[in-house]
Length: 367
Ligand SMILES: *[C@@H]1O[C@H](CO)[C@@H](O)[C@H](O)[C@H]1NC(C)=O
Ligand SMILES: *[C@@H]1O[C@H](CO)[C@@H](O)[C@H](O)[C@H]1NC(C)=O
Image (tube, rainbow, N blue to C red; front, top):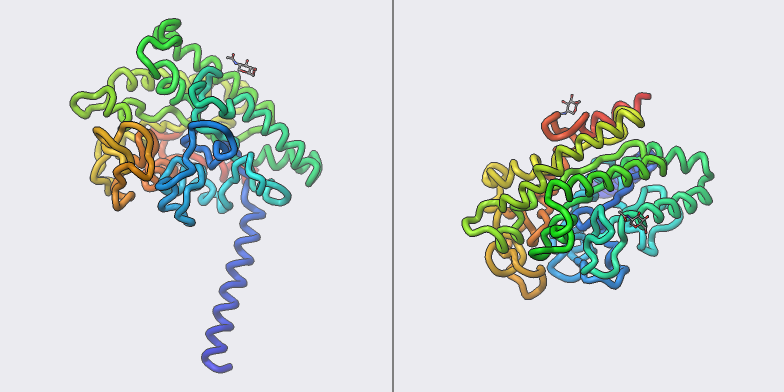
């Protein structure tokens, strides 16, 4: 062989090996299902008449295509990074017309920006997919997959899948605290509201189990009072708003309690709790340790902390997104999402209860 053809040959072999491993690993990869709000929406809201959307620049500026996709991030969001860890392609939004045939076997993303645990959360966004509807779509998905690979194989795929659910933040910021004297805040004291929301969440999680979910990662609420939007609206000194922090302080431990109750009912490792608050506080309290220049100012936005209004082409935009913890007034950057997901995958018991995702999947592979 001439040296040129040798190089071409080696190059082709490398390509073939790469293609071989790719298809083998995507076959071996587990399916992944995602439920929840804007932190995990991969673009469902693009297909809806709603104001809660991320389908225009500069959203997606650091995504591989450098175009907006409906993700509330400069680049990848939390589910995308989990998919990477699973060795799978990103889940498509359930409403995407591209989600059909073999691609259904990768899983699906049912999340919709603006929703909460309660049906009245996010009503101002008009047309969004509430959680009960997301679960109806999951049933419809299962019928479609049964038609493709048969009922028994579909069941196996769903039981083996990893499921992510991220809910609750909007029940505070887009409901109880949306306006002063909101209907919910006149109806409930904060502790009573949290108890009510948690009791509704427990029903949702039990329903997911009924629908076949067996490995469910449930994220707590992040530090609601520390996001640029709340700093801009409520904080005089740049410290996290204590009232919204208290909401999370009440919500997160009660979430862990219901996960323990559900696990004692259904099997000790069906539901994994992620201490998202803790994972965020690491870089919010010590941004420099994580390579950020600030954890208070959003990369994209306007007003104090770039925390007022939406992120649009007319907003301030930071040149290097990796130096910011927050992309817009509410959502982390891709860089921060990587830090959060690495705790889901391999975090110690301070971050993950009763174990991290890597341990869970390894345990269930060997049984
Ligand atoms: C929310 O709406 C769904 C569907 O209409 C209903 O099944 C569910 O009970 C409602 N939840 C609450 C808390 O009212
Ligand atoms: C993941 O969880 C397992 C089980 O709790 C633990 O042994 C392991 O150390 C965790 N991984 C890391 C990196 O902490």
